[in-house]
Image (tube, rainbow, N blue to C red):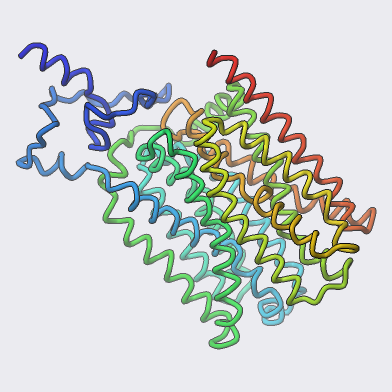
Length: 458
C-alpha cells in the first residue's frame, strides 16, 4: 500500500489533474509549468486518489478534463482564420470602401497599421491575461474583438472603422497566446511543430477566405452588409468557446498581475538566447512576408505589365502554398527534431527565391516556380516559430505574446521600409533582391542557435 501511494504521489502534477495524460503515458520531457515570480502560489489541494480509475461521483473533477486534441486544434485554427479575415477584410475591397468614404484607396493601408499598432501593445500583456483569466477566456475575448471589429467597420464611418481597427488589433494580439497555451498543453512533444503549423495555416486560409467571399458578396448585398454577415462568424465561434471554458481555464492563476509583468516578460525574453533569437526572427521574417504579400501584385502589374486578374491569381498561388508550407515545415521540424534548423533552411531558401523575381521579365514560367518556393518559405515559417517559442518558454506557452510583439513590429516596419527603398530605386525586383538580406540574416541567426542547442545537448 505504501509503494502504491508513492507511485500515485509521483505523478501528481498538472497534466494528471487535467486528465491529459495518465501516470503511465505522461511525456518524460514535459516540464512542470513554472510559476511567474511575484505571483501568488496556487492553493494547496488535498491528497489525490488513484486516477487510473476515475471516480464519477465527483463531477467537478470530471469537468476539468481537457477536450480532445483534434477538437482544440479545429477550434483554434478556425479562430486563426476568422482573426486573419478581420485584419484583411478591407484590403480585399479597398476601392469599394474608399469610394463610399470619399478617400483614396491607398489610405486603407493606414488601417492595417493601426491594427498592428494596437496589436503590439496588447501582445506584450497577453500572456499575463492568459495566466490571470485562462486561455479559453482570452481566446473568447479575441473572437469577440474580431466580431465587434467587423460590426464597427460596417458602420461606414471613419471613426467607426478606426475604433474597429483597434478592437481587431486587440483580438489578433490575444489570439495566438491563448491558442498556443491550449495547444502546448495538449500537443505531444514529438508532434508539436506539426500541430502549431496546422493552426498557423489559418493565416493564409483566412486571407484567401476574405478575398474569395467579401468582394462578390459586397457587389451582391453591399459592402456594409457583407461585413455584418462576416462578423457573425467570430461571434458564433466565441459562443462555441463557452463550452470549453472549464477545461481550458483550469490552470489559470487569478492573482497574476498583468501590467506589472510586462517588463519582467521582456527581460526574460532577452536574457534567454533562444527566445531572443526568436524575437529577431519574427521581426525579420514577418517583414519579408508582409512585403512579399503587399508588393507582389504591384510588381507584376507595374513593372512587368501583367493583367490585374493574372497578377491576383499569382498572389492567390502565393497564399495557397504558404498554407501548404506551414504544414510541410512543421512535419520537417518534427522529423529533424530541431525548429531552429528548419528556420535556418527557410531563411536560406526564402532569400534565394527573392533574388529570382527579376526572372518575370525574361522567363515567366520559371519565375512562377520561384514564387511558389517563396510562398512555401517566406510565408510558411510561422508555425515552427510558435512551436519553438512554446518549447523555449519557462512555462507552458507563457511568453508567446512577448515574442510575437516583435513580429507585429516587423509587420509594420517591413512594408514601410520596402516602400521607402522602392521610392529611391524605382525597381520592385531590385528591392526584393535587397530585402532578401533580411531572410539571409535570419538564416544565419537560426543556424547559430541550432549549433548552440546541439552542443548543449551533447
